[in-house]
Image (cartoon, rainbow, N blue to C red; front, side, top):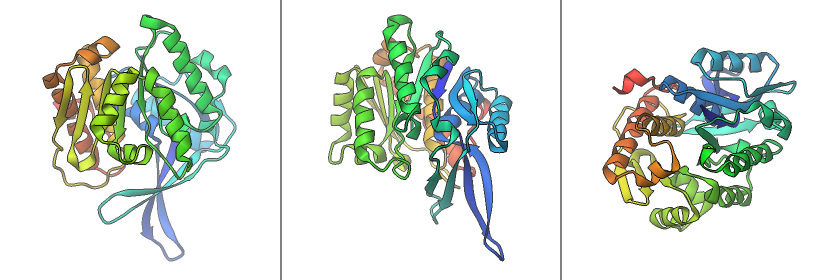
Length: 312
């Protein structure tokens, strides 16, 4: 089972203007939510660890997870609002976000909820704003510590910072999370944009060397239209971007991450030793598979991630 931890919200897209305002189109989302759905669509046993509102918006989120085949046994239901993310798109299809999340359900994952999370896990994934806001951030850290304490029988730990400064504007908080996660992470996926915020002036190669020295087994940096890079103990690999008519880029990073994990699982490489042992050619194939998946999402509106047969 692949346990994805984090937020579940409604992405509310800007629509056409009306006589008295504008139309809005609400879609289920949130980066970890999208990752769980993306994994399920790619045929992986995805599960979700979060808290979701008992209100009508939360019910819609739960129905979406169930319909996609995501295991929801680790989801707590709480009487709190659902986070809203307002999304506007510029002429190039690049999104801008405004979040309304203080006191909302996906932040209210407390330590007691860890009892919902089974111990036989292949992977635990953290990232995005749920990893830096309380009380959910402390609960996620406790889960990571639980799995690390189990040694070889513990889950692979994956991390994608996925910075959202309009949720947590203090970059020091995000840097602290990165510093805490590096020695506890096996698979690190991060965008070059996030690295530019976290470590301005640091080259990608220098960062990868730092992460590997801290204990990360595989470092992957996505670069949007410039493709992706990967590093492990055997060297460095790259993949070129897949050219596509972009509708928008919402969910592209989540799709890349889901497809990368899927490739690793399908090639029996979803463990720390195998991540470190991937040959450059194998890593190139993994990055290429993930890039193709992300391109499909970019060709469609919103985080409409591909299914496995679309990548064959």
